[in-house]
Image (cartoon, rainbow, N blue to C red; front, top):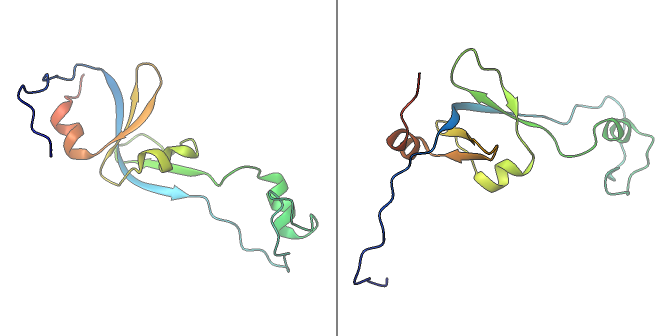
Length: 120
C-alpha cells in the first residue's frame, strides 16, 4: 500500500436525505402454470407464443419486479428500478437512501447511522 507524506483532506457529511431502514425484499415470482409450456423465451424471440408462459410474458414485459419492505410503519413496500439491486447490492438492515436531486442509493446501517441524524 502506498504511504502518503501528507494526509488526504478530511470531509464531513452535511447532506439532507430521505431514507428508510430495510426490513426485507419481495421478489416477483414466475407463476406456476397449469398446462405445458414451451422451453423458449418470448422475450428472447425463441418461444412458441401460444403457451401459458408465452401469454404471461406478453402481458408482463421487462424484468421481474422487486420491492423493498421498509422496517418502519406506516411505509408500504415499494418498487425500485431493475438495476438498483445489481448496482447497490442492498442488504436487510441497511438503508434505502434518496438524495435531494432524486438519486437513489443504499447505505449499510453502520455507515448511515454514524453519519446521519434523523430530523423532526
